[in-house]
Length: 622
Ligand code: CA
Image 1 (cartoon, rainbow, N blue to C red):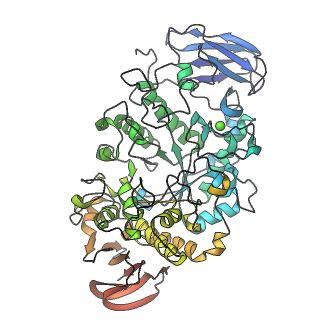
Image 2 (image 1 turned 90 degrees about the vertical axis):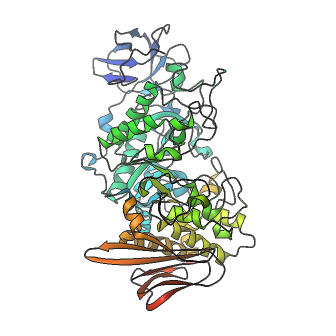
Image 3 (image 1 turned 45 degrees about the vertical axis):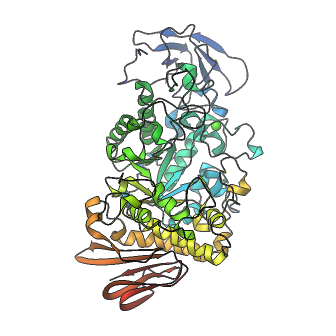
């Protein structure tokens, strides 16, 4: 399809306001008939105050100039496919049906110009906390704004995150999505939000007033500002790979059949499993993604991006996004799901799949190798991983420990999903055992370890995260794991009620040892550079696996702190027996043993063996 617009400087749809007149521009097909703009008093309902025909300019862009002061009014475009706010609305009315003409500069909270991105030297130093606005705060008794962006400005919330020690929150979809009716918030309907409507506007149901367009924008910024002040980065979950639906989407309503991939028979390709997949390989879809990412970073001060089903986007687009983001700030972290949810309309070798990570420098992917080595396979909730005693998972776990790079001591023929290393640098690997998808860790352990007791559950939970946090990848936890959260066994809780998804804050009192362990584990990682080597060469040189029996993985890491070269030994004992592992003779501080971590050392021992209690980790330092 020939496109008239230059992809260099194009802004898709644009609203230029002055007191005298407002000019609206739209990217729509040249041969579209009767392209119109309508102006409204309200964000929904009511009759149009004015309908203005748009004219096609020489640049291939449709334009309309509406005289008079239009501030506070709403607008829609219409190319004959139904009204919509365009693809790049920056402010919308309730449910995102109409664009809004507002003064963006008035949405900046006090001190916004002084807002600064918290410093993070290397992605290896990040500790990512994946959270949903509603899960986190809806059941918190002292929350002033339960379920809202503003909850993350509250003292209790910031205190919890700081106390835990995470330095980045990855917020589940927070752009305007379609599955929650913003006019009926009293229904308390829940959704993860993987159903994008307006990509460049915050979701209304997380604001205190979805009807007033500037409120969600201001509150989102207040949230970012508060997190930044607390030293916490904000990572946005971006879902450019599909839309809520095709026929009613802003893409289809402004430029039909351009933004999506089709099958040979003319039906929509469905790599997302949600009925459609977008076409990042089309120049204007690629440009849309680049512009959208830049907009969130510049307007909302976003510090990182998590690409949902990155395996649907093409490699070239991901690299161009990395380049555009580098020009703003190279420390902005980018990672994604290196897979799709179905066959895509482009061949696999062109896509942002995990196996193609070597072609995408500066972009990371989730490691299903370490995740499933620990908890068991994604397609069978009742099958355990090494946590439940499944044999031959050691090499897969070791592959995860080194950050999914090549390492002389990892035998790739025995690794679960990958037969060759896919990360060039360890910071291209997300280390995790659970996320919002699938069962959370507690539910998975209950489902896959028959007869598990509460004590065993806690032992295995702590052991799993010890593997995650002593990996050379970028550690990532699902919000609430530090509270021993469960989702009552629900595997896919995307629209489950709060009673399934909410964090139960009473668990802080019920299981104080769990929070304490997570907190200390994070501190341990941040104190010891051994776990954050950050480069593949350093990892290959400094991480040595020790001889260990089946069900045990042990490694010794060398690192320099100041002028001192020292070693940390980690032994992960997944067996139900005490294990004695030979280690180099030395005088060791015991940093972790029997489910307790003490940064000052639980003990000092002179020994050549680590004696490790069943289903626990031992960490020693000499
Ligand atoms: Ca919405």
